[in-house]
Length: 86
Image 1 (cartoon, rainbow, N blue to C red):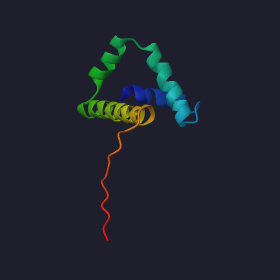
Image 2 (image 1 turned 180 degrees about the vertical axis):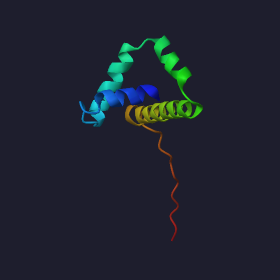
Image 3 (image 1 turned 90 degrees about the horizontal axis):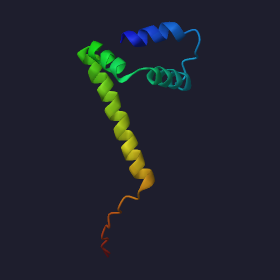
Image 4 (image 1 turned 90 degrees about the vertical axis):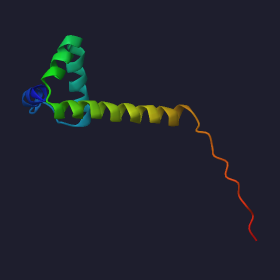
């Protein structure tokens, strides 16, 4: 993706590249972009890049949903009947 290449070139000597820096940069860029800007970026993606973007979104969204379920709700326990075998 052209945007990723441009951001990398611009910030590679200014940031450490750890998760915190990358998150901060990504969210700062997204905050400045309009919906139209985002749709334009999507239109420029190759099919493989689009699959990757949607795939990462699906994976992260599902992880979040499952984590919320684990954290916010107790899963029903399955009652296993135990037989006393002598």
